[in-house]
Length: 409
Image (tube, rainbow, N blue to C red; front, side, top):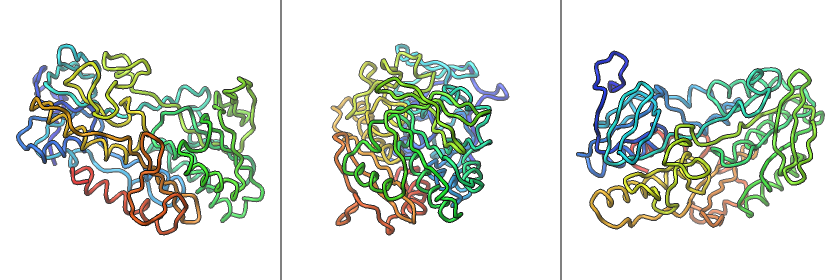
């Protein structure tokens, strides 16, 4: 197992330098590092990542539905760090891009020539008053944390009827389809348990429609109609009142507030760029790392690139998007390093495989123009298909662990 380059015992230097510093050892950071090493094995690369565990988060939907054990989604971080890449087992506390430096939470300085920023997205649990003190109990659950997704299954499995609410906050969020994925799978379980006729399922979404791409939205609307799911768009969860099992929501069009009683509620927390990014010179007005949407290069700092959830790239925050962003970033970073024009172009591709229940899957693939961008020839993926369900359960996790994180896909 590779030794971390963290500084717990004071053995490391207070200041160090690397040719390329990658902030974040999640999907984006590991993939970029692996691709860089494959392209040029001699590059001096370091990854700054505080977590000792790495998660394939798309599986958490299936964990919440009782179909997979959560441990299947987790692996140790160290073996995933590409060979020859230094792992700085620490978090970034401050960026100073004008000086080509960053500082870690342990007070150490890292100097770099090139910087890739991909620390992921921040879950703002505290933005919903009343949520954190009851999360995982009393009918309140969420799939948006490793330690919570099994509690979602416990909540769904023990549900005996009443009102079940599933919320979607204002985007951007990671995997914008996830709030409704678990809703469809919960509907399946309620039917198996014989409580569906005694259940009201309500989807409260801050978005104007069920999906941003019209052709997929039409299919998902039909799914909801078939399942008898209520949809309330432009509605945002403001507060939980767990002692009374009530949710306070607001209609964003009329600003009218109302209270809805629930027996269970799956909450997707509001999300934002990490605070360390928000307060840095790298951020745009909304707090994201400000990059060109086609080249992934920073608009003001030419030696900085960004991809993934913390970037300003105006597309869905998904692993599939990262898989297409990474080769563009790597090609353009290497071109910049060679003082050549940036020739690679990201078209906004993202994908969202949505299990709609009954072992069916809707594979939503699209680009910046919100047009379908299918990757499977001769197959209409604008409709639900049972043949695609194993892709979500088995194919994509294997692609992730064995190809994407190794820089092969």
